[in-house]
Length: 288
Image 1 (cartoon, rainbow, N blue to C red):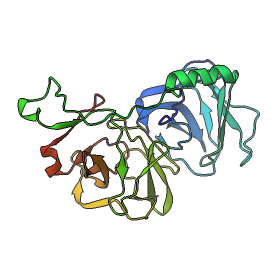
Image 2: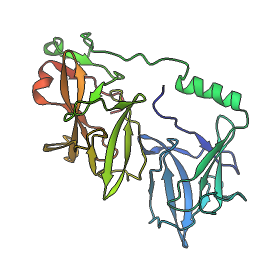
Image 3: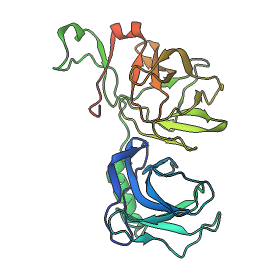
Image 4: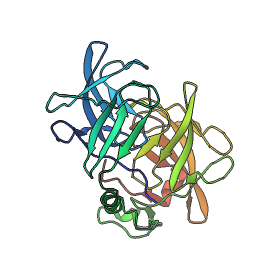
């Protein structure tokens, strides 16, 4: 299994990469395009995670309107004669760096998209190489190996290393929140209900959702997909941005530990309950 497939796209006119590493969406480099809607021009940054519909934009995006997409490098409009099978709007094609095309609907709010591979065998080989589909994940466990940067008084602590697979459970019904090697949660944002999928590996911040979750905003209520109970912890706040946090439980040693995650999209803070920090230490992320 693998966590998420991240697409690297190129302009179908000039062939230059349209990936933007400075603007991240779902904690991955975004797909940058210039757009025009209703005579208003701006920039949109789409999620590169296949199946995610999240984006950021510097102009209002009105649901139902058709958007024109222009390459940020050659300033040529990207369009095609293909129509969306869902709503009839023109499809917008991009080149895949592994060969083939991915097309998205030009109508704001429509989720229709599809991928065409020029050489399926070559594409599958690239997927195996890039995402290690031919390997079984080795779930790292707790270790007592002290890092050189640690202070002497921390050497007795048990460390949870970056990349450790977190066996995660609901604090209410105690059922596993892991499904297909992903941390699955239920999310409710202003009455719109969907699924929030997170990487279960410590300090790997990739995410995907089935509903639109704006960057740098609260995702809304997070709950267990088994029992439906809310996971929001009312007595604790994020130590970085002071946003509400959700509480889950992770397996460690012979007990479950309370583990907190920030509910603000894009914030990477997470932590343990104060008393658990006396004998458990979380590895620092190299991305911070």
